[in-house]
Image 1 (cartoon, rainbow over the protein chains, first blue to last red):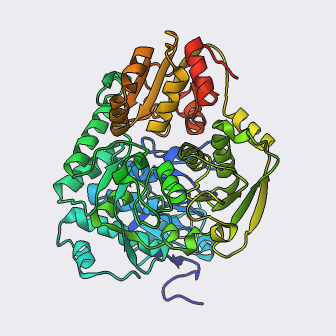
Image 2: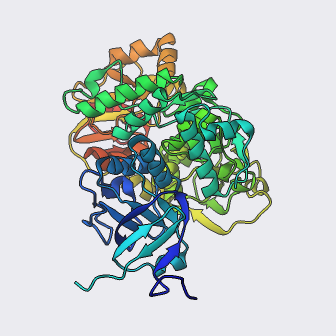
Image 3: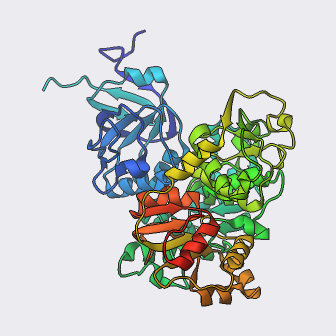
Length: 151
Length: 415
């Protein structure tokens, strides 16, 4: 497989947009699903679930990739509040569709004009995402990234 | 891709305003996620979006009101944070954002045309009690399970935002528990070794619910071997199973409406797994629900909201005795049930005995209600499961009879 422009054939994947939009930011790949309700503090933008491997990590301004998803009926309010405050992710890449994450993102875009695209990725696409680096999400569901800087 | 009628297309294109457009977008997106090919019309909704859970609840409600939101079906409200008749339960000076927000959200949902019943047990109200096979929207977890399991009505558990969106357009994706195939049991649970009188103790049903939730998580179980279950018992299993797990439907073979026989419960299929429950299993579960001891400060009853039958039990057990002045006894219920017990003269009797009847809310929600601190006794497994984490209290879990004896004695009494 080759791509038209990429220097490396692994530099993009395509997901299914559940919430359509564009975003850019530093990629954060979570090692476990995160329940936004109870596991994430919208005031600080950080993971607060003590059982989560990335507790303390900030999601603010980042493209957050999450294996699976852990929704609850409290999820929309927490995600929406973080988008209102600007402490939330700029995009969510998930491998299991969750209506509550989608609801939070859709409603926040109507209320606060803060669009947080939500993309559904296959397991294979998810594994191809780099550990970090700067990524771009476009409205078609394409996630592309630059190679990690050497710093 | 879900097929839409002309009316649905008009909502989606914004012909009827931004609120209806957003509602339709939410429902269409949910249908895509569920893989539903069509939508199903519902007869009514019981919504939780009217429960204040932060700034977005308020902003969303204001948006619906300002942008032309309309309800397509009768829409009933879940319990709120505040008891309008008893503001001292959660004083505004202590948590102004939550109390003012809750009051504002209650006002807006009434203005949108919701039926303001403010109860987590809508099935006590004839208008919000569906019948076998009826499609409805449920959101509160115990009500979803009771609707599906005890009444044979059909609803998935709809989260905040989706519940009101579905009520506005009067339909939801035809998926999950709305479909025949989605309602078949996959797990068989056999009760074994229980004495004839084991189920005379109502706590047994609460413990069974907790056991189910912990064991089956989101799967549908068919429980075999229960001799009987009253409406109060069904409510206990539904509430507890939706608390420790996400049980939205369970069958009791020979008891619940879609499980007259084993074959009915499994809809002709066979179990994927089988479990056996013995009395010790349920004793262990019940034992874990009590977290501490010490001086008894309060007794919280009515999670989910007390029914007329449960008030009848309380009045009978209390008889003409008064509760100890050292203990607060709070019973949460709905306005409709409170009215009914007033007509029977029980409201006055309970007040004279020192019992406080609390409306519209629940005592385990945060902010913590006045007087609910230290060691608190309850007959509700749901209350016992949530309160230590949410309110930072210790719990003594027991049946209603022991709660009443403890209320009179002023200390924990176990029979």
